[in-house]
Image 1 (cartoon, rainbow, N blue to C red):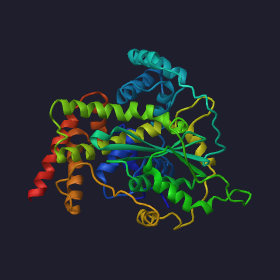
Image 2 (cartoon, rainbow, N blue to C red; image 1 turned 60 degrees about the vertical axis):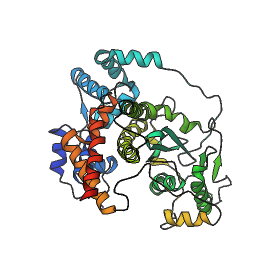
Image 3 (cartoon, one colour; image 1 turned 90 degrees about the vertical axis):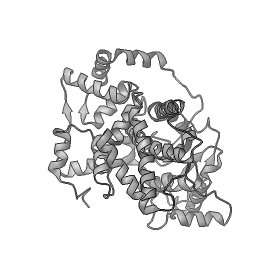
Image 4 (cartoon, helix red, strand yellow; image 1 turned 30 degrees about the horizontal axis):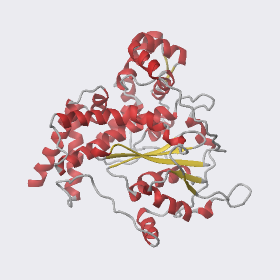
Length: 412
């Protein structure tokens, strides 16, 4: 079935060649302007472009390369070295070698380059690690850098390739949310991993339970059932495939958003004793974090890791076990199965939505809010990039406007 068949090819060409959108920018634009359409993603947009003969590959002059490096440097606030800059340019359809990129960075952003050089530390892990292929180990972990503001990150990373398989953003860490937002999408898209590896926290118990339930699907090429445990709990140090990625995620997502919220908190713009303020922080923070996390994933998955290669290049040769239709339990079914042997905490919001219990008004408010943000502030991408550059005015406006619209709809 053609990808995103409702789109007009000429309109998409104009987004890139007239409006100068990147892939990520075009996805954000389409998501905001066509909220009723499902399946708007970078992967599907690239499929659509391939099916319609739209290519944005470019070979640039030195001056043009400098301009693009300057643009990407501004977007990411200077945190990208030459390898990740190469990945960012590649995602924009631009080919350039690392030596050219390094020279361009030295010219257009020498201060950032020196800061990266001084801050670089080689973190060597003396423990041996063995993953035979993509699909052998799936490392999962959660991060609470922004837990105070109702934003929690959960990552799933393939052990062989270091490919970030999926990232979930949620208001609170929760077994049910982790299963629905992380495990189900990962397994549905790529297949079953031979083993899921997590630390000793309780938040992955539902994932462990279903991984055990699907144990009989782990049939190897020789017809034998895998003799490895379907999941394993280890210390954080042993879960290094995902643990080391938090430095990348925090640099590009967690720390900039945390600094923004701390600034608004210190200025008394937000009051965490107010449940409506807490909900607003969580709602907007999760949306911005999702956008920034997707960019972080794209950069990581397409950058070149020394002695390993590009993580995304491993995907086509994966050896995950196939999941027959209907074999992966729905969230409700998984919860019922687990409740036969244990207890789960219900998923809860962070703070209180003024429109709680009114799903139609919530949907109307959310859609109207983001359309308003698109007109006023340039939408999710513009607000996110303002945060990266430590300009918090747009975030403050978004925070106040969301509360204002909620109260207006509450009284109507």
